[in-house]
Length: 138
Image 1 (cartoon, rainbow, N blue to C red):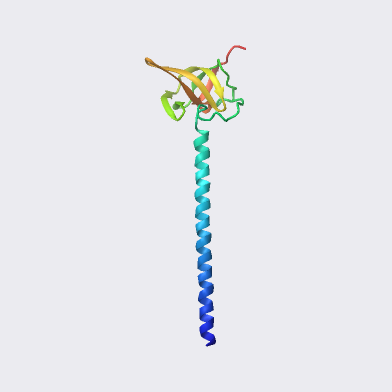
Image 2 (cartoon, one colour; image 1 turned 180 degrees about the vertical axis):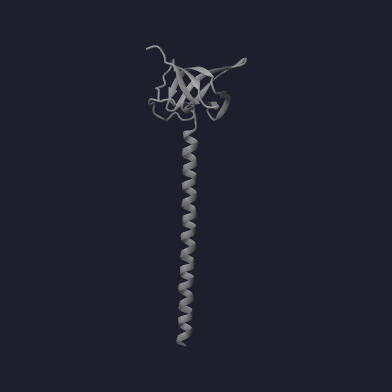
């Protein structure tokens, strides 16, 4: 008799531990999924031009060479490609060496007017793709 009750008690403990393990695993999966979603949301928000992110406060922005960017500056694309965006839409892909005048600066985004062929687009380029080649007149 005593052996049977120990066996049942042993199975009960084993089942309890198994249930705890399953619950802990499920909680870990849920927390990991939530963390990944938050990271994706933060990256997605950071990669949006100002027309989508109007809540970002204005602050000084620098190019790759750490020169402050300001309206009126002439800038050059320093990466092989840079997207000219309006909201989430890519208007054009700019090439290394393309030159533009800055119309506006917001956060890490620079508004430029880009002429390519017979087409002219106004949109936003991330500052990391640009370098000042001629600062604006004071």
